[in-house]
Length: 201
Image 1 (spheres, rainbow, N blue to C red):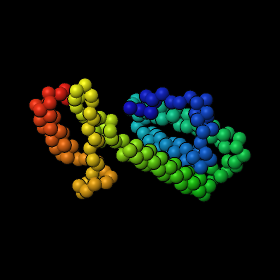
Image 2 (image 1 turned 45 degrees about the vertical axis):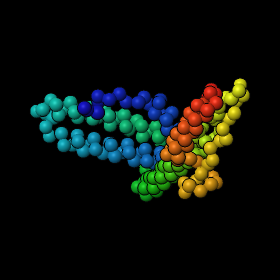
Image 3 (image 1 turned 30 degrees about the vertical axis):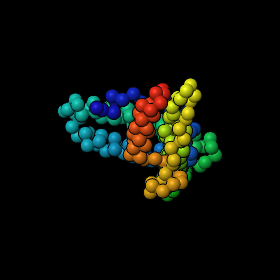
Image 4 (image 1 turned 180 degrees about the vertical axis):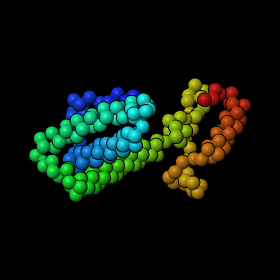
C-alpha cells in the first residue's frame, strides 16, 4: 500500500492534537516527522533514475512528494504551536536542542508508563482484597441447617471455623471438611427423622 492510500489527518485536527502534547513530546513528534521525510526523500532519490522510463516509479515519486508536502505543513503547524507557547523554534531546529527535547520526551513517556503500571497494580490489589473479604455462605452464617420438631424450628449451630492446619480459630472449612460435615449432618437428620418423624430442612 502506498503512502497515498491512507487518508491523512486534516491540518485543523493535527493542530488541535498538538495542543494536548507537552513541549518534550512536540520534540519527539518533530523528530518522527523529519525521520519519515528523510525516508521518503531517500526513496525518491532511488526512484529518480527510473522515473523517465517506468510510469510506476514516476507515480511513486509524485505520491511521495505529496506526502512530503503534507509533512512540511505539519512541521509548520508545530512551529506555530511552539512559538505560541513562548518557546524559541531554534531549540527545535538545532540538533542539540532536538536531542535534549527527545530525551525529555522519552523520560516523560517512561514516567507515564510507570504511573499506568502502578495504577493497574493498585486496582488488581483492590480486587484481590475484595475477593478475600468475601466469605463462603456455608461458613459465614448465610445458610443454616436445622429441623422442625413438634412445629418448632431448631437451627443447628454454625459450623466451627478452622484454619488450614485443622486447629480451631480463624480461617474457614476446606471443601473436603465441608463435604464431610454435610454428610455427617445428613446422616444425623436421617436418624432423627426415623426416631421423631420430624420434617427436616
